[in-house]
Length: 524
Image (cartoon, rainbow, N blue to C red):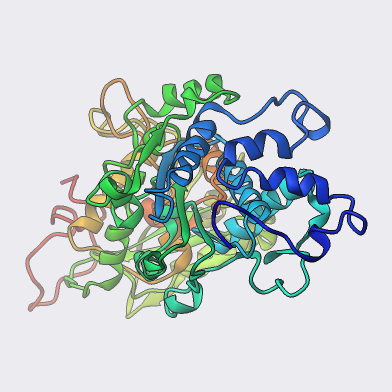
């Protein structure tokens, strides 16, 4: 079968057995015209598509570019590569759906591989959207749409004429590739491509060598990393091969520009949050995070260095029921790893008495023979309960080693930070840079990477408020729970603490309150 003409056997050719044969024959005329196919395949302006008259401008551009590539005999059998770094909400998944539907509808034994940055993205967003457009298509009855695949209902072609929603495996990249369709049509689509490991990209490259084959490779994503294969296809050394495009959400029809402008006013035009989420650009610092993955991993992997005069400081992030935990984290100088955290599940934290008794146990305990020198307790946003706990600990004779800290108070060093929360997280970040060690707890690692910086007119460090952080993470399909572990560790940097224990004769003569890194390296 030639690429320029499509012939269908069995049910497709028998109009008596299949009344959709005439519709399918018309759609097959668009074998090298994906834009034309999209315009006639769906009931634009009707039902679910009421108010929609067709693709958006950037979608028309991509479909037209692909059509021109295929209609030119000189380029038809050269791989068509297209990488798009875009902002949020521009209709990426709809475009992917059309390409899949067009590919299967117009060329016999087409193979489509759909892959996403995460399995959740593939299962909860990509597959449902693709299934929707196949259902709306004029030839919907010719396909069997499943959770993991779409098959053309043509006897004898079930294994060859299909689209598969494929999850990648970094340990076994060959198993997640499987892309060869010599002499036919092969379509590889990466959604949220920045999350797909480089080894998977490199494995797929082997399929591009088949002769006399229509090969189409589309990669589209927010550029969440300033490294990796996707970054290279748009901004780096591979861009000359990929016909890259950057799409700003504000330039796309139907996008809520007013909401975007509100977030720009909060985070700033050049913040990584705005650059990645709306402008289609790559992050310029730490993947958009105040504390990035590299810094977290370094703090997890380095060896602990202790001084004998380092006091044990505890930070307590309180919660009151719900899904958030009350977390106690410990730090002794550069060591926040050796003493395991204490976590009280949300369901057990509704009663302040339960929390008070647990904290009293912590203050009465000794860790490697040493008690907690000071406990900093979050007393912001929890009504009178934090006050009741502080009063209860004082009545137990433990009050001199407990202090309440309000995250929302003005920073002590307000020329550098806006709020106490910003200041404590800043001290924690400095400490991590200067040799701080943390454990491998997944919750802590995730929490440390949640906040991003937002704009401040005085150019001070200012983290996004928690409600905005949760909203941002939720929109991105990420864990949007409160950073309990991160806040608990940050509280250990509320104020410098000096141990009230006598130094051993052989102890290094270094004070915990002034040593760089001992308490964030910012207060003497």
